[in-house]
Amino acid sequence: NWVKRMRQYHKEHDKKQKPVWKKRFAQLEALGFEWEVNILNDWQQRYEELCAYKEANGDCRVPSTYKENRKLANWVRKNYK
Image (cartoon, rainbow, N blue to C red; front, side, top):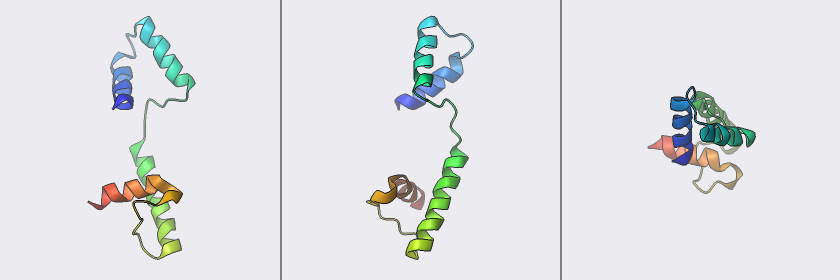
């Protein structure tokens, strides 16, 4: 996807950026774009949310249509397979 490509390009060209890319990277940073993503932190957050869901609902069967936390629903669906 586009975000992944931008992160990879930034990583590969960080030291030898052309002026046009420096400007583009600066614009993304001004929007709060994160170049490094810590996947373990995301996983831990979803795990804690799943624990809270189980505490509240008595099971870990988060519906795929769970509107209260769509990220959790997607995470459970992906990790269930």
